[in-house]
Image (tube, rainbow, N blue to C red; front, side, top):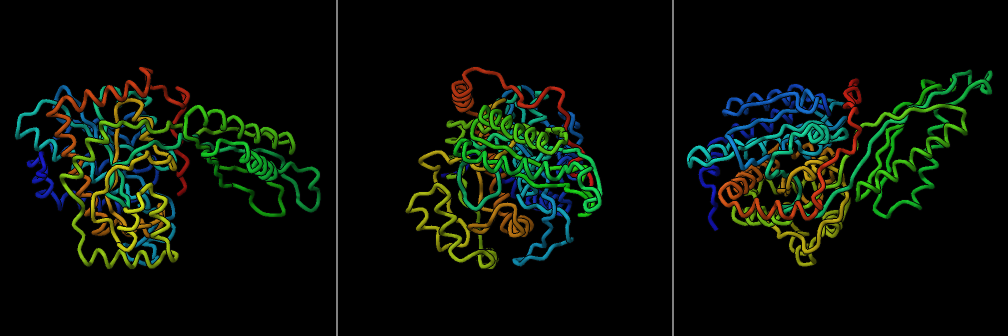
Length: 478
């Protein structure tokens, strides 16, 4: 089957060096959530050079922007990300070797995600100019997907309200449309305050904030038996005192609370806070809550999934070569024995698909959509976007099969040819889908009907209080 957006496809071919350059530059910058100042400014400037008008500081976030070209409707939005993960620096080689020890790294491939969306936006613009197509193409520069969920603040500010459709993608191990939902999520810091004292001389005069956190965590561990089966709660103590002979008068714990439905998170969040309250009572301490984010689960859209699947089938898989397969083999050799087959069995694939893929290094075919929706596992602020406008997403193979998420192996491949080839494919798929949406109104009508059915006509409501501010200081010292 021939592609429909031929001009866009040729434009991506002509601009390959530029698009790869954007990805590589974002990979080299690797800035943390809400601190992506250079990354956001660089991407915005590249879009301006391509003729887009850019609105900065969207939703009260200095590193969020909306780049637009065209006029009127339909309005087709592409979501771009560019934030990195702390401590994940890695050279683009198949062994653990940080580029800068302790520095951030692109362990979720957001450099690829941002560059792929950039390529799609500029290519669709070229097609629209050539054919005189009415409509608007937008690229949403979305910071802080990891941990602090920039899209939720942008959604609360109404950035997606007039969008007809939003499309996004994510680097992965498989070429496949993503179906199903995600886990709604609250994140918060709990800061306990007590009374310091000499831990040996007069500990009875102290009130340990660290004891309070340990008791709270114990309460949450017992709570796990009584949570919804697919709910998840994780925590890490980020401050626990300065030295062991001083009773800690301050301690801090970072919590994530997840569940398949927004109302389940709300209920579980209150129960986790009850554990904090009980711990404070037991230790005669006090605590304060610093909410970091509250996001929705993804609202699927079946017509848009069908559209993306058709585009992926027309365009085909990435063109991997022997060098790519060798690099992928070396990555796989760093994983536990049997990891590929066990990983594939957890990916909602048929037995035939698992058998076909298990001896490969890379997914070099386009897989059909799953027969049953994917089970929700992780969380993403794409969820908030999906409750504002019809939204769909897909993945392309940018990684060796079974590559763990948030790993050094992920960073390595995000900065070399395997990731780049999957990224360029994603740009072509999104440009192709955008063209179909602009030239066949039935797709948008069907997507809107499915959206209205799933939302029941309810308007989006942010899960965060109206006065809640972004946690700009969460990574200030990183």
